[in-house]
Image 1 (cartoon, one colour):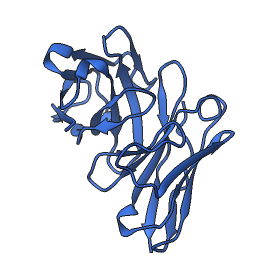
Image 2 (spheres, helix red, strand yellow):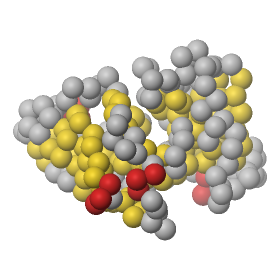
Image 3 (cartoon, rainbow over the protein chains, first blue to last red):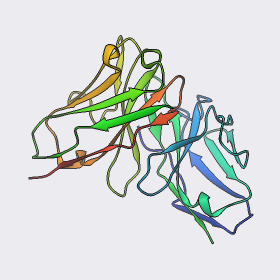
Length: 110
Length: 117
């Protein structure tokens, strides 16, 4: 199972909105509404931001939103803040009880 | 508060074996599927394996199938990963994570395994 494809980097100014894409195939994103997103600060464990394409766990800011179209999922961060500077990963269920992560996107706040 | 604490990471020569542990607390361990995910230094996340709440089923990524074995002890709230025939490319931080559904809702801080002669 190949990793999902994400842009290597995305940047934005404080207060702006950015969108990170995550492209898979009909075997993962296209076939299941089980896309999740994670944020990882340097030296820290990943943290769940979005699950089931667009649902937010309790405690996660409503600045984070998710969507999906075909084989591509997207994470939008609105009102960009300095603390959003981190690596972001998407993940998808691939069937047969296996999972695949994305290639990671480094978000920079200018 | 959910806590997942991995341990067992060391420097090990290629071809050797190693067993990692993950101690869980703050939630009802035997109600959750548990996973291992790894991250090579400076690289991305790679899902490795899962075990259902009752150990009835286990699943593996192709990259570790046949070499790694996941197990759990619900009486001790612990998750394990037994790794054999280690390769230099297995060098990574190893995270345990829990899931109630199709996502990883809590993660440990990771333990570093270095495969080197």
